[in-house]
Image (cartoon, rainbow, N blue to C red; front, side, top):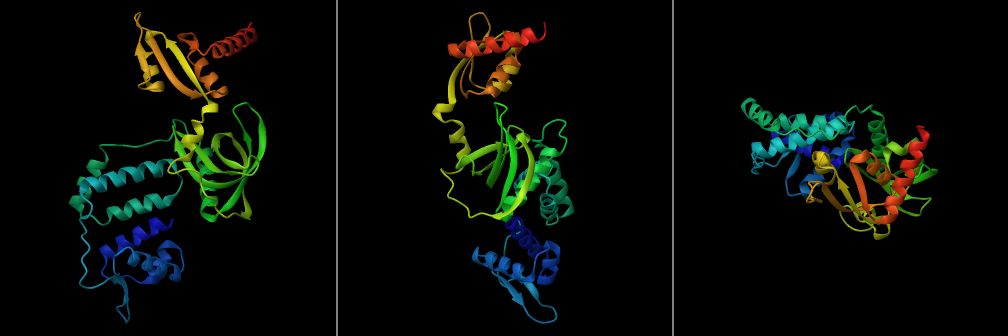
Length: 310
């Protein structure tokens, strides 16, 4: 990514007085012209990077200008390395590991020892237990399509088990609750949609480029889509008291204790097959209090399960 490359070039210039544009081009596998454009971008950011001519020439920070190498404290550097480690474990892109090593190379041996010690205090690993690598491969393919502004095609299985062929303009990869999602413009629905990578099959990058559309909302538009009123249901559940630790893990602060010690949960959630499956996963340790139609649905599903095992 361009931002990674710009940061890496700046780190190199902090370590060396001058560096050849050709050397940088070979290191990042881009053209010399691209490196010169990157230098101009760094200049526009307020750091005077210039090109020196002659036998000992190259690219360097302008003489007389001082860029404080300690602009990042050891604690801040440790936080960056911790974050990069977490990303590197979930996303199959070696550039994150390379960037992490380049940050480390700006430190002395004693500083590196301190930073590593601080970085090991917090370990971020959002990858699920027993990951088989297939989702990572899909994420890498979609990431490539996003970088190249190429459409992707796949067969998608929704929460109701229905399969449809989709052609999507990919905009963002989202890792949420240990699951990867694609956010993009769906040609079938003529709207922005969120797709779970685990439900995709026959995923492929198209040869068709797309022009980016204006994304609705700001920041994280998928949050507002997930919480559309027409998708949500006010759900009240009651759990046996032995389930307290599990309930806290699943519902957080949306809990309260009843007089008999059982646990009440009041939440707004999207109603679909996923929600029915979540409730059923607690077995006989939970009861749906409201809404009434949800009690009926869970009862009917439970009866079908009972008949299947007769």
